Length: 80
Image 1 (cartoon, rainbow, N blue to C red):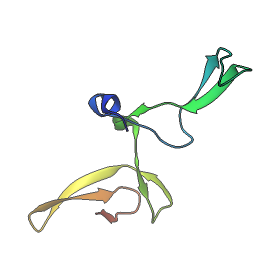
Image 2 (image 1 turned 90 degrees about the vertical axis):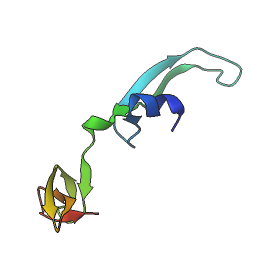
Image 3 (image 1 turned 30 degrees about the horizontal axis):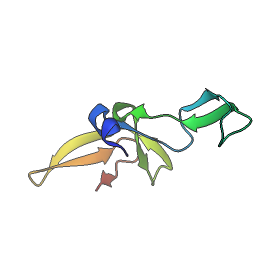
């Protein structure tokens, strides 16, 4: 990840937010044309993956033994 994406709080997720760029012919790419690549998305749009439910899940926070823990809403499992 580069410094710019850290400042903007963005991440790359494999297979998500694929954009098409038009490229001119150059010495490296003699044909030019359309190039598909992944673009960054804001970190607020990312959900955690819940292994027990097998999909993305929102989280809630609770106090247990004086500590704040994250719990997956779908499965109720504590996230470490």
